[in-house]
Amino acid sequence: MQRSIDDILKSEQDHINNSLLNYIHQLEVPDRLKESVLYSIEAGGKRLRPLLMKLTCEGLGGEVDKVYPAAAALEMIHTYSLIHDDLPAMDDDMYRRGKLTNHKKYDEATAILAGDGLLTNSFHLVSTATTYTDTQKVKLISALSKASGLEGMVAGQYLDMEAENKLVSIVDLERIHHLKTGRLISFAIEIGAYLADVSEKKRAVLKRFGDCLGLIFQIQDDILDVEGDQELIGKRVGSDADNDKSTYPGLLGIDGAKQYKATLMAEAAECLVETGLENTDLAVISTYLSERDQ
Ligand code: GRG
Image (tube, rainbow, N blue to C red):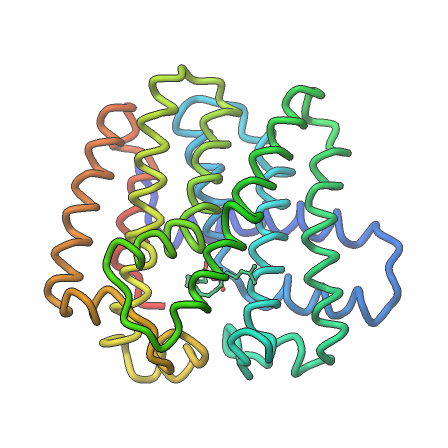
């Protein structure tokens, strides 16, 4: 039976938070740096990427406990990316998740090092996890560094900054978002399937699903910037609403963006049917991602 989105989010967040916090708490880190890392880790993120990994693995009949170290590592990289994205040299934001950004709460140097530490230790976490074989560790570290590095999220962030205040084509916009936001989301799905040890064929279909989901997530983010609840928009300070970057509603119009999102949702739903996941919690979370209001 499928659970409600609230039940899914609540039940999984505890597991993921425990894995993250258990790992970070046992590290010997200078007090203030550790405080700064924990400030961002505990700032109220939705843990969507770890959740996607877990639900993919679970839906495919895999052993879910195997997911948590990789999922925690992924969330550490996501958190580092947000800390660095908020820095003065990048988006220069004052608030994130309704709280002061890391560099405003601490200072720029501490925020840079907190991000660097989260990135580096994500690989340490995977390499020391007792749940994985050596082959699995190499696969996980290789896929995670590829998704987040110079050919992945970092490239997307660079292209996004380069495109600032320019009108880019829809093809360029898609490339930016595929790299910047999509690669970590696809990684979550890919690794959920890998740890469940399903066939190459299923993994290829789920790769298509991950790519669709990444774009859906971003289109919804852009739509929220245009027409989200005004009170919530106030909390979304630092979102793309406050600069001139090209967005899906900007390029396609708000109706065009919604239509495109619906096309991608239909393709994502087809992928779930092809892999037998259409009645699982993964389907519930996909719908949530396309309709979320924050
Ligand atoms: C600094 C290398 C580097 C990369 C930054 C992800 C990113 C790249 C920047 C964030 C900019 C942004 C707001 C993108 C929109 C999509 C997005 C990643 C939203 C935040 O993800 P959620 O909603 O965040 O999962 P929470 O707060 O729930 O963790």
